[in-house]
Length: 182
Image (cartoon, rainbow, N blue to C red; front, side, top):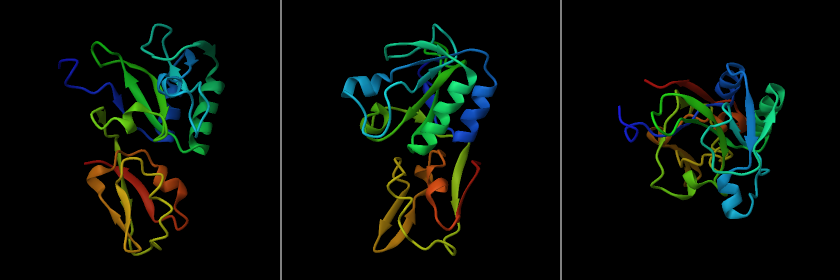
């Protein structure tokens, strides 16, 4: 595979991010290049770009060593701030996991630039529309535009789902679950 055939980033759930972190030995964090470029973020702090290699590909400044518990705390904060976990692969071969970006629609290039490519995650949403109250709570957290309110009714465009799981967290009726993508 060439470096252009596999996107550098892919999407995962917060639980998957925890598993990825627990499988690593070393951790660094730096400022997010997107947040620096925009001059900040309305949703989150600046230093949320997590890497597992000191030489890893990052675009932000102020890299520092952190502990595993510090890395796991970033995931907890990402969950509370409704950030999407976007692990990234090495730039050259795209075969080695280098770190995890924690992204949102306020400042991150991926959501602001429709030409940026990102692999969909291992999971996809499954909504039980019989239990759904069509409250619309899931629509604003779906940065991939897979969940839309139309005429007071939820429209799910499952093919747009990238598998981040943000919708599951905000659903008051627990009618959404993440299932393995087929």
